[in-house]
Amino acid sequence: MVKVLCVLYPDPVDGYPKTYARDEIPKIDHYPDGQTAPTPSAIDFKPGELLGSVSGELGLRKFLEDAGHTLVVTSDKEGKNSTFDKELADAEVVISQPFWPAYMTAERIAKANKLKLIITAGIGSDHTDLQAAMDKGITVAEVTYSNSLSVAEHVMMMILALVRNYIPSYGWVIKGGWNIADCVERSYDLEGMNVGTVAAGRIGLAVLRRLKPFDVKLHYTDKHRLPAEVEKELGLTYHPNVESLVKVCDVVTINAPLHPETENMFNDKLIGMMKRGSYIVNTARGKICDRDAIVRGLESGQLAGYAGDVWFPQPAPKDHPWRTMPHHGMTPHVSGTSLSAQTRYAAGTREILESYFADKPIRTEYLIVDKGKLAGTGAKSYTAGDMTKGTERAA
Ligand code: NDP
Image (cartoon, helix red, strand yellow):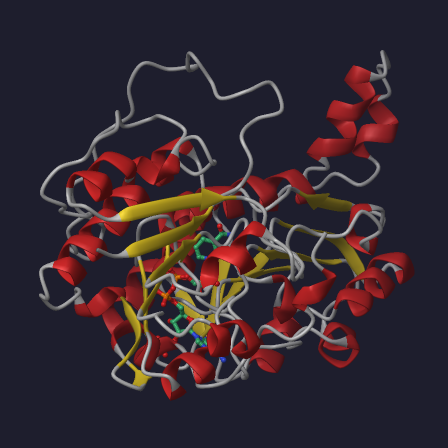
């Protein structure tokens, strides 16, 4: 019998939904590169239900309990007396989502003597100290591609919201105003601008494809160059480093994982190299940007806008300066947890568990760490190290 400890975000303040805005969601079988969407033997939820909050339980309870396992679900994850810390000692599997991450620090990993598998229900495993997981032989897996396109859609929304000054204009309507000049004094067309992505993986490439019809000039930097035919099809300019990219772009979107190479990449120096009045959209990870350098950039006018949904730590403290800095379009970490995305990553989490219980290999593309080293997607996109320092400041 295996104890599975699952950390999920709290239910809505008005309680777990009894009805939904829509009756169905489109069925996605494949992603653009041909990879199949998750293929568990069955699911015990209706696609489109809220699965990522405590009462949704990622749709796992029946499956786990029918097989004789124990499922503990909590949202109480911070502090030494948290339910999570109390339950961790004898857990074999830990599951959490980046939106409400169970920070798996070396200290926690050291205490979890039975721990064998850490699953990210979603994408991005930087909330786990990967070095500590490697040292202890713990497997780390995530549901690669499950919400990449969900995030790409959010990036598009945020680029347009910033450049066109949507959020303040909406604010004038709510305030009862008709203040056209106030709305448009910071409003531009995206058409003709130079837009670049830091990383052109699953999300970055999807963003480039979605931007193409807007008649913008497209740029990217990545550790590996895209195939020549893709560069040609999208009219991409490749930059060998981020400095070269930011110097020519009006809008920069960040779509790289957080690992030692990308931590604090957007600091005062790099922001100082950008054109005055640039926009940054970061839905990758908060720590890729230096928190205070972003605030300084917005206050000085070097940046015209900053938007994203990723913070550090999460939940962000009430006094986090990104809540109050000028010209921002921040949301809580939601881009990858639309109801559509939840259907896929809940199914993918079950697929990983089914493989684990049957002693079958977990899909290579889902692996981040395995057998003491970076593996699968982890070996391709990450470098070894620990990104969890400072997590004790989570609200
Ligand atoms: P992928 O693994 O498909 O893509 C990541 C890309 O980043 C790869 O092309 C990789 O290069 C590139 N990369 C890594 N390091 C660097 C670097 N130093 N400079 C430039 N490029 C680099 O992942 P996804 O596109 O699906 O997701 C990317 C990230 O987005 C996730 O790791 C996660 O942090 C975040 N995310 C956020 C979500 C949200 O809800 N806000 C949801 C999902 C993901 P290569 O592989 O060529 O070496």
